Length: 446
Ligand code: TRP
Image (cartoon, rainbow, N blue to C red; front, side, top):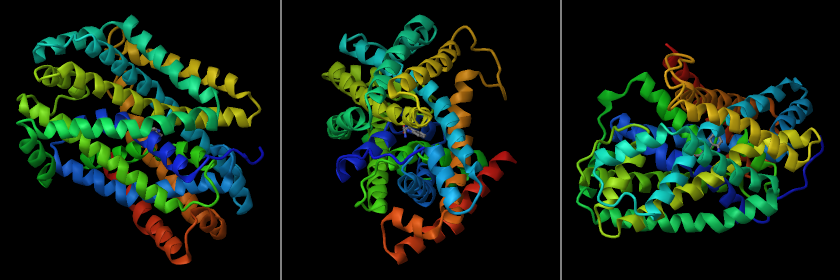
């Protein structure tokens, strides 16, 4: 496979694209609910530490490999390994990444479909004056309605694959440029509004006053998995974006900017969500339904509730759209590398993901009791194992490849930074990120 000539049109476009990939359900849906399940501040601090010590350096490694290879992820790995005189079997890491994003996209599209449904419902004012129990009941009824859920899942996948099919610069970039600033604005408005609620003070102390006695190896595994998930690292998806990175851009600076934006979105979303949770006396450890059940109640009891709620779901939908485009890109790029036309590749991938997503949809009704592995149904399995196990394993191999396998000069060129900075990054990867990931993974297994 030949080098791609495609490039993001500017440095800003690249940062926006990577931010679009990073910011999504992970920040706004997953972060609040797993923080809620794990008791708040201690989990939050661990997650931030993992983002800085693991997520960030591995993110640089991943983008750097794509930038040096300038091919689809699997082809870049094989090409660079060949250059270093190592085995081309590194190709399989790209395949493993494609498998990981496949699993993630299938449940991601279903949950994104929930936000389409909730956007429509909140525009129609359906949550006005409802109690928590009533919203909970209608959420459960929605989950038990495979037809409606399939409709939303299908709609969302068409939105995603449509953009992916239209090509890198025309499709992805224009959309990202348009949507990301809007998303920030909406989120700031929401957080500013949370400050005026009576739950703001309690939300702050719950989120930022840690109790480390509750930290177990499983909590560590979850915090680490989430650090990879939220940064979109570990599945070679950012590697695919790195292949289109402009030549004259500092990678570390871009990566730090994205991580800061990503963490700040999660914190703003957390402040918005937990403030209203506490203001309404609701339970922060509600689980995956946290956002979908508590926010409609909380907002609908407040002035202009439907308006705020509609804005919130619009924001979520925009964020998940740009993330799922990133999830689809490495699979489509790989097929394109094998000679398939982009449109065909997107259709084929879309169909396969649709089928797996359909199984996730049915996990809430027909096959909810079907135990696939460790007592988990299809949805539970897809939303747990790929983020918490596949991503850290993939991240570990990506880090290993960049720190030990790639020729040093190629790595330094692709990182676009001086000798000292490069050595600092590489030693951090070799002696902190890689061992730390291993230790947490192994302690979780035991
Ligand atoms: N980071 C996104 C989120 O927080 C999800 C995501 C997008 C992702 N691309 C990815 C996760 C690649 C893993 C790998 O919602």
